[in-house]
Image 1 (tube, rainbow, N blue to C red):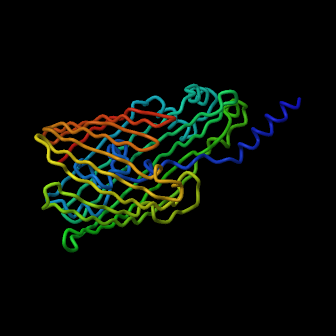
Image 2 (cartoon, rainbow, N blue to C red):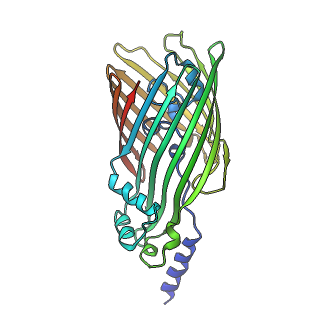
Image 3 (cartoon, helix red, strand yellow):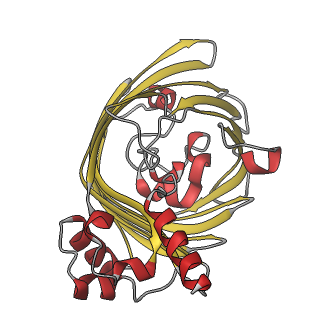
Length: 338
């Protein structure tokens, strides 16, 4: 009897808990292949060109206009379909049981994006994006931290050459999101009284994200230093899943001379309110391009990713493998550049 009382109190306490914050890499609005393969290092490295650059100041370096369309999706297609059913209100017992039968931590997404950039400005539209993140804990009494979100977003960038290798830019970004965010015991989903668990919420966010760039393009190794203030803005309401949590990003990169191809190496430091020490903040990355093939690698204290991109004429396809301590995933990208 005492044990049942403890379990009951524990389950009730989960009703007032909230899901964790969606990781910054899933909220930054950059092209998804860049986010998954380079992480925050995409603010510093610019040899991988997909969509608008992560640092808005970099758009002033572009010499030719470019139009990109990108379809990005993970291999967990069935999981995403089940997550979308929950988000759309299909939370009957059969659907819920099937969804939580996975009993593993999963990070999945699919998105469609189109962007155009000229020499000093660019615009991007993402009419559809679905992301689902689940974390399972405590095998004896399974708990799940769940976020399922559907987004539509638009962003614009303006930039200018200022003086003597110095560029400055600004990105404005609007996102509308409909999401489910909960932390609960799996047993609650089967208890019959689970209607409130899968109620969706909506939120609107507007970000203004300035960036600067020092690029010595005339030097042999083309070194550059970048700085960006990301995730600074306002929200229609306060939530744990989509907080207004500004981040400062400072990075540097070089393009060492190699006998064949193009090599770029960079180091990024990312600081926000959750940063506790230097190991939490840094990320190293490199890219190597040879002919139609480009390889990408990035590493931080908590995760690492590797990928490749194959481009032929106006078409490209890519594969990215991302891994952290609790979850991992394989993601595919298809793109057209005009």
